[in-house]
Image (cartoon, rainbow, N blue to C red; front, side, top):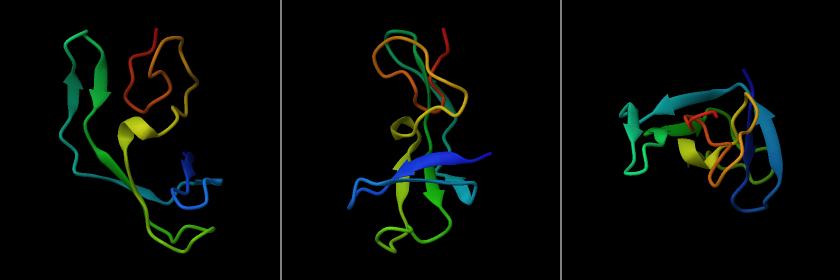
Amino acid sequence: MELVFMCPDTHQTFQTDAFSIVDHHGVRTDAKGHKHLDAKVRVDIPCPFCGAQHVYSADELACPFGQSSGAGSGGIGMEQE
């Protein structure tokens, strides 16, 4: 599965399936009952725009399965409505 990443330096987006989940602490539930994946995603290849290797919080990434309505929707691990 490919995910969409945004270079934090150039703000350009790219897609790749070359990523690893790191610092995985499972699914957490916040005070409002929303579930979040408490993990980071490391891109395993150099960024095609700046050459750096980026690591993202799972909540920073767009959901590959579509978006639901509401604030914060679209992050990996976000509860689908």
